[in-house]
Amino acid sequence: MARLTLREAITEALREEMRRDENVFIMGEEVGAWGGTYAVTKGFLEEFGERRVRDTPISEMAIAGAATAAAMAGTRPVAEFMTINFAFVAFDAIVNHAAKVSYMFNGQFDCPVVFRAPGGGGKQLGATHSHTPDVIFAHFPGLKVVCPATPYDAKGLLKSAIRDNSPVMFIEPVALYTSPKVRDEVPDEEFTVPIGVSDVKREGSDVTIITYGEGLHVSLDAAKSLAEEGIEAEVVDLRTLQPLDMGPVIDSFRKTFKAVVVEFGHQTYGIGAEIAARLQEEAFDYIDAPIKRVAQYDVPAPYSGELERAALPNADRVIAAVKEIL
Image: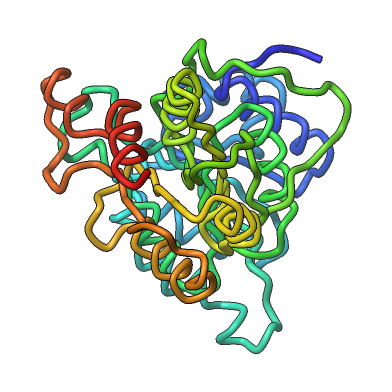
């Protein structure tokens, strides 16, 4: 069992799946000779060759369109966007074609394509390169949306995504790629993590914190500080936004009667709004306090490091939200 960073876990998953199934191939900008913008596919060209590690032109629409067609033809492409911000350029291919093709053809076609994309803020990449648009993609039926926060989940979920017969948007929090605090033990033996299953990352009895992606580590930091004051927070990691598994969330809420949703996307029309709505619909009798949301402020991501940190969620804001409803 090795201790891996999030980036290393993703690399392992890709390499193992390409060795397992010759129908799996990688395509994207600089994934071959350069080894990927974030070095995820470093060495892949030498191991698997140009047929299965394909550098593409700088055209996200072409990448997504070709990957969708290749998936319909029976292969399993993993298409990398240099950043999820560029997936906007490919929106038509992702949402109008990959997500809908099985439905439009009455199940005669599968579309087993994975769109990999680093996303989120926290790296001083500026307003146009720091979006967290996860909830936008989760809005469309037919497209699965996954966002892991730990190396174990990243490896297991990516392997599941590649084997899935539906299109999957696989979002990788860029700020977690090489973070030392995210390094985790990952088994050497074969394993997968199922898509569409939330996970309780910390048990508690006083308040439920619902989160995913980078928000998990902010929430765990907040829970640790709250515990020093005698407040035990249960932390639920969604891991997948579409399909959304509310089971562990509802179970936890029925125990604590209070909830805070933490997300790195903008608050307005965000995933927190969906979670709050589902809680009042499915667990109304258990609500003892307003459901609070801690999210990125509704401003474009600042380039200044200090201002960017101020705009994003942090443990202090989560702690303040918990104390407000307690």
